[in-house]
Image (cartoon, rainbow, N blue to C red; front, side, top):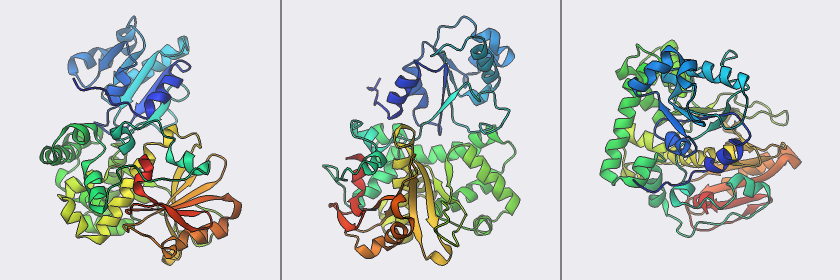
Length: 410
C-alpha cells in the first residue's frame, strides 16, 4: 500500500460531512474519488462488483438498512436505484454524515427529476493538480491569491518549456502520475482511452461505433482549447451532425470533455457565443494522438493548445475549494479582435482574465487583449495574468502581470 496523497477536496469533505447528510463526489474515472471517499466511510459498497450490486438493484432500501454509516456507494450509475433509496432515507432521517456517493458519469444529474436534488451536495473532483502531486496544499488557491492582490511567484523548481510538456503529458490521473515509469504511463493512458471508447461508452450509451467514436475523440484532442464550428468537427471526423452531437454529449457525460461557456457583457459587442472545448487532461490528447514531448514541441499550434489545456486543468481542480467562488469562461469577439483564453468570474462580480503563452518572456503586446478587456470593463477588472514558460514574474501594465505557469502550484 502506498501512502495516501491528500487531495484539495479533503478539507471540503471534512467541513461538509459533519453538517450535511450526503455528499456526491463526481469526476472522471480513475481520478481517485473512491480512494478519497473511502477514508471517511464505515461501509463501502462497490457497485462495480456484481456480487455487491445485485442486492442493491433488487431492493436498495432493504440492502442498506442497518449498515454502519457513513456508507460509501461507489459507481452509483451501475445501480442507479440507490439514489432513490438515499433520498428516502434522508427524508426519513436527515442527520449529517450518512452517505457518500461517487461516480464517473454525469448522466442525468441536471434532470429536474434527479432524486439527489436537495439531498446530495455535489463535490466535483478531477485529476491531481501539480500542487496535489507535490503535496503543497498549504498555499491558497491561485484565483483567491489574485483576488486578494497577492503576488504570483514562480515555484522553487520552475520547469523550462520542455519540462512543462513533460508535466502535462504525465497527466493528473494518480496511477500514471505518481507510480508509473514513462513507458508504463503511455500504455496506461492508451488503455484508458481504449476502455473509455469501448466499455465505458457502451455502459452509458450502448450501440456506438468505437471506430467512429475514436475518430471523433481524436478530432477533439487536436482541437482542445479551441473554439471550433461544429461542422468543422464532424466533417473532420467523417460523421454527420447528429452523430457528432451525440458523441460530444456522451464524452461530456463521461466527464472527459468539458465545454467552457462564453462570457458575455453589455460592454463588449459582437462576442462569439460558442463554447470552448477542453479535454479534461492534456495527457489524454497525448495518448489518443500518440504524442511524446518531442512531437509536441515540433507542433506550435498543438503546443499552445496543450499548455492552455494544462493551465485550465490546474485551475479546474481548485474551483470547488476556492473561497472566491469562481466560474470559468472564455472571451472572444468576432474576427478575433479580442480573445482571452480564460476568464474567471468571481463571486462578487469581479473578473480575472488569463492568457497562456508558449513564450519565456511575454511582452506588453502579448497582453494587449487583457489591456483592452481591462479598459472596457472598468472596476470589474480585478487582474490580468499572462502565464508563460519562463522563470520570472513581472509587470506588463496596470493590473496585468506576467507569471510563470509554475505560479499555479508555488
